[in-house]
Image 1 (spheres, helix red, strand yellow):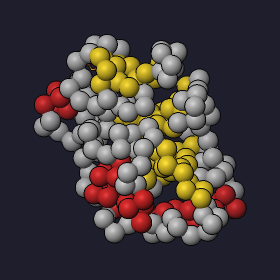
Image 2: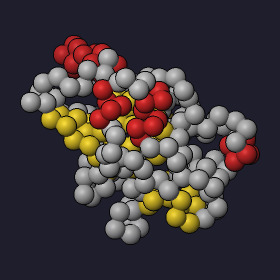
Image 3: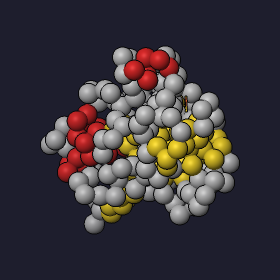
Image 4: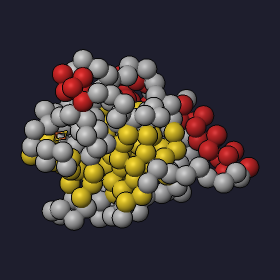
Length: 217
Ligand code: FES
């Protein structure tokens, strides 16, 4: 099942307060306090506003290029196995896609093909894990890593770094360039001194799609 851009939640003072608290906590990188349970997953940002030729030639901005700290943004209340989610990150024009595989792995990639910037779709029924597919020239990307598996795309999809909270909500906290690990992308944007930067080292998130789970004690 595919899901379109998430709708803004109905106003709720408790929800707003909880989201604000989470936002502040993540922004401060205080991810090691008690009673939290976070999953850190890969994803991507997109940008259809970028011209295809410019993207292909590397002249224009590509997703994940930012050296600054992208906004921390809730993208969904939850994403169930077998679902995909289209969203925009880090900017309003940056198209991205998150997918939840049947084994629970949550991954996200730019919805902008690295060949000529057509929209990338998830084909869940392909293979054991589905695939990310660009219909313009039959470009195919690995759903678990974002790497090119077929067709003309010159490089893998950039990633977006997501945190999944205990209540299932999914938050985008950063991006990583094509070929860059989640840790490299996160640390470049949030700083080497951030606790999460250190915790990403050596996780299964090196190429995207992996999951890190941490539980406060
Ligand atoms: S634009 Fe995606 S394969 Fe050509």
